[in-house]
Image 1 (cartoon, each protein chain N blue to C red):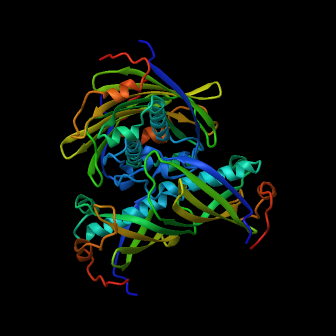
Image 2: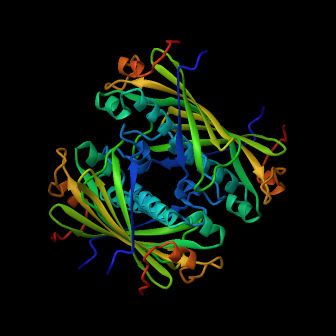
Length: 138
Length: 138
Length: 138
Length: 138
């Protein structure tokens, strides 16, 4: 399966994202993955905010995270977000989080596209058009 | 000024509310104060969720917190929430957070009542009626 | 594989755990699962706080969550936490979150036991003894 | 009183910082103010992380926030953090948060300098030297 869109962003670890172990709490990574998706959509020329204003939501329905090494307060991390697959109503992303050359965390998420009526809907053209080389898969 | 409504609740400190100093992050207390207000409203016979379903919001417009001693992970705390004042469109609460007999934190918040149109509105009767001995002040 | 320990707790959804979709943000569930684990350990007669004071940490190394239906603000949920497996250095839990009879979310987590030196260590007897019918598996 | 150090940073509003009202939860601003302080210290040539590694903490002991207008998801905000006063053991900052020309929020915080023994200590030279034109006040 070809990678159909990918982007790197920087994440600076916030103090309140860390816990008494002195490392980032495992929940904070989900917020970063969300930022990765948001910036990937923005690069495509639309924004998640605009989608929501049109009544379109992307609801997380599955998440898998493997924590290999801890991130720490004030670390400057590189998050690579990859759009792996666009189905009829679902979108799958993968994530790699690194500090310098060290791979800290990998993850995948599956989102479902939800319409204003709260029901699943086909991934809208605005979102697909935003992806340069998208290939439909289901 | 007479105290017009007051209630104690217990708060168990969550792991992710603590930071690398090993104590509760100063932001977490605001969430607890919000729970204190929510439970005070519930005791009055309505709920903040019902208010929102009627298009009524209570927006925080001012907050003051004094941190005297830190709370720690897994502490079982007692939060006293007091409705101090109900004005025409504003409500003022105060808070005292204790661990056993030690006073850890004091705070006050001011909320504005906002209607479905996003504009200030008079504090609704459902909320005032929820308060046993309310005395209007502005 | 026999279930070796299990417990239900109640979760009241907090306002700041919800997002602009009006439902609980997918990250908040991880915090609830952590509370589920914490209370399961407490029921066994020790506490995670005591473990940490002895230099023992339980680091999350894998998490998988399936979100089936959204939880909403002020919902009173039932979380069932099950200790599924205790290995030499790892512990696996599963989770079921319900609102009344509706299953909202299922999840599994894997924790690694980490010593004061930051390295994996054998799951300590205090933790195993806390589990009534634990059966070692690896 | 002369302003003794000041800096602007940009804040992009995260999705999980917003609540069901569709605006930023009042607690999220405290995290942003903390980032403002962190970046102000960094600009001075040291970092809060380095201070902590030396056993020096800056504990928030008072916070006052006035919320004038709501920030919204995906807003790009400008936060101005000002070091207002350096006392013997305390530091006071003020904050102004704007979206374009609109002032959304103002705040002040007071921090106490805490040593490795958990007791107040004099503001260390590393921190004062980091401030170009600091004038001691108490």
